Length: 605
Image (tube, rainbow, N blue to C red; front, side):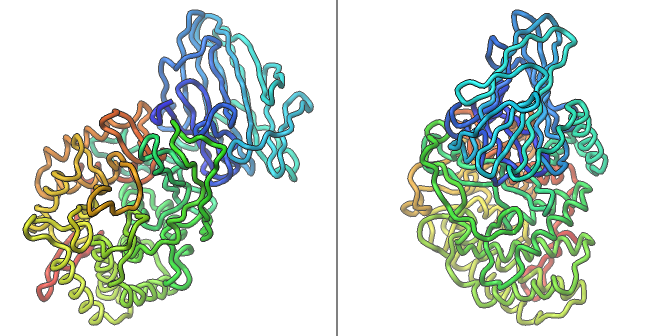
């Protein structure tokens, strides 16, 4: 399966990837960040999967989500007739359920199923036994039950069944998970489970406030973003998977099943701008809890519940997607110093306040502590937003976001009457602004650079006008947009940076594809600099990169014509929503004004 051959189903606690061949090849239970029990995505069938398909096999003829929901319908046309499999994960009821219903559409189609549970990322074979007409599987802390409308047999450590489905008949399967020390929960009724999932998503979409040109695409991206939200805490994952490669066959394989602070501002923009105030509030509250404490100990990412300890390990029993090894769990980048994160948090909290999300005094105390930290640390080199594993540098984007964080502190005092040393912050803003324009801009090339003295570029430079550091009309902004298009574009799509520039800035071998979120940033930059026709054309090309279900991974390999990187990627879908809002005229303008020769911003005001 190509990465785009997978669709996602989920219950806001975890998610499963379902291939065009009817196989669930990735599922972590009971949470997104739990060890996978189906891990063949990163290995082979022996590492766990659940196949449900016509006996003749093969890829489906068509598939779709049922309306604006996360209920997936997959159909096959065979010599014996046509059949549909409906997959859903009902709203969470204290136990995780996967419901799969086979429905005969015409003829009489022979079917087969094989479920091979392998807990512990495909390593631990459970003890499987028959019990009261269902199968039970137990391994250490994990237990799962499989209920079926047809008889099941156990062979080679897996559950098997062969059956035929005539037109009009429905055959159901329900997999339920619960920790092994707890009693087995009552099995969800399969028809009621699917109906409940459909009703949940239909009700959720009623709150959508977007009437722009690309409503269907925005709808699907918002559903995906919601599906990547861990309901108990409101945290939004970067992606549902780990170790899907940025370089096929290479080592650029990372675990994205965590919550990045950097994503907060853009996620808040997407949610607040489309009517999802409660989701924005929950994400903001998660952000405040995660950032609480000593500002010096702030991390760039946290677990779903705000957990800090995310040690990076490799799983040597998994061969990796298309041989892309190592397979990693955890993420060592959580211990990096990335200066821009302080600015991102302050920017996000300002956006929330400006949108009317009430913030208490304790939140402002936290923001002032973050501002104090920026005051004493903005001039340190860091690893930058792309989490390089090479030497630290003075990244231009990091300095710009330090400026943005201080600027949002100034706006909070001046607009909302909060207390703070605004004159000191203004002086520091001016100092950072002068240094970035002096040391981070290459006058000969007419562009800002990736870091001070760098010969490379960074797609994050496209955000300079978005955060209000300079206006879109500034010649340095226009020159930077052109330089990024010239040096980082591949077939029109934008890479994050050039890994080979400056002797190999990220310290890793290999290359990577175009970063889809960065390409959406270029859409916004083209729109901001008055090239709306080009912006719309690029946006339409990005829509074409989505798979048949409207899903996007992290990157796109235009040479191979396929998606790469972890999937579905929240940052990509957030980029789609925000760019659609920009182009539709529903995104609030960033008001830039000049005070004493220094540009300031009221973002979201």
